[in-house]
Image 1 (tube, rainbow, N blue to C red):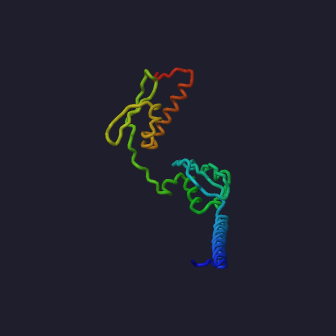
Image 2: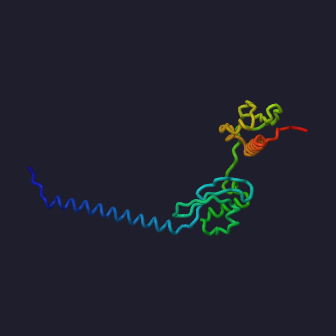
Image 3: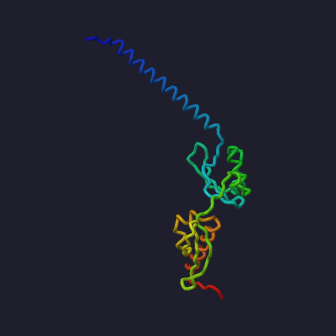
Length: 190
């Protein structure tokens, strides 16, 4: 049997410890470098577009304060009216805010609208029920009729309509809700 040299075992453990210490020092040095680099960045950054609009100033952004657990929701108009400094954002984010303030963010980001799979082809009134009915056509050619109240809960259909059709359905649903909450009966026509 071979005898173990206690000195060589001790040297081996010291070598392992030195290797571990060197690795930890390198990791700590890299962490400090990354921390310093992140501190050099601009204090504000856009983390999400929460509402995209083609109307000037109405697009809303979620803005994070760098190195803080703080997020603000501000529209492009609010950023300008509350005198936020665009130099506090990186160049791309500042350009996004400027484009949104002009109502041109879609073009700036090169977002092309996709063709909707559903389209409102007609709108009629059911006088007995006192509600508006939409005839909706799919790209496969099938038509169906539904009230605004019904369409607003059909997520698969709503997500595949054009923004104008979604607005029409939402506006109609809001109108019908406001009328139904009022004590007045719904009357159509004169």
